Length: 296
Image (spheres, rainbow, N blue to C red):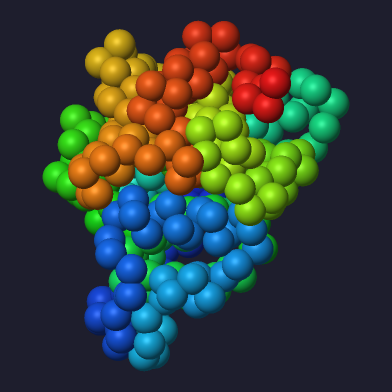
């Protein structure tokens, strides 16, 4: 995975509110994907993290001036994205939104951008106060993606993903898939309160995986508005394998087997490892968002 060294990164698409101090309180739900599943259910069903017991007590962290300016100061060029993790996220966000802007324009529409908020420990959102325990998420209330970079270590160490830069890109692109669903009005289809292998909650997640794959297919050919060149210049087969491996690592069956020792499909909210790989690859293979109709 390689970015154009000379690309001008647009840091306005990322808000860096990482704090240099640890906030008070603690999360009442365990870390990683366990919390993420509960949070996604809460967000889709219009329930804030506080109501789910996902936010801890104590004061909210306030980003220090040095932390808040970190991305703005350090992530200027694509060369920075090739060497720094936080700058890589900026570049991925730029690439993902470049694609969706061009795709909407091609279809005669106008894309509404969404910022990514990098935080640590705890963050206030329109969906409630959330902690790092919930993992990455999209909040439709404020149309923002929330991400604690520490999640990527958990993805590898706790959930068995091979890791790699494109595994991170897959996660970001998946969350922007939820943003596309929100813009199109399909995100609300998961608000029926049901879970299970054939539930709308699962279909929404699989569609977001497919949209992530669609972006990946076009990422190296979508020009950036500022330079006329793609921000992302190279994706290898190994990168795509890392994305597929990350998709499998967050499959409901894998998570349930790892954390509760048995698989209960009636409780699925995201889909199996095989389903998540299948739909990411369908998007990548076809490059066509129309092929992402998981509701058929």
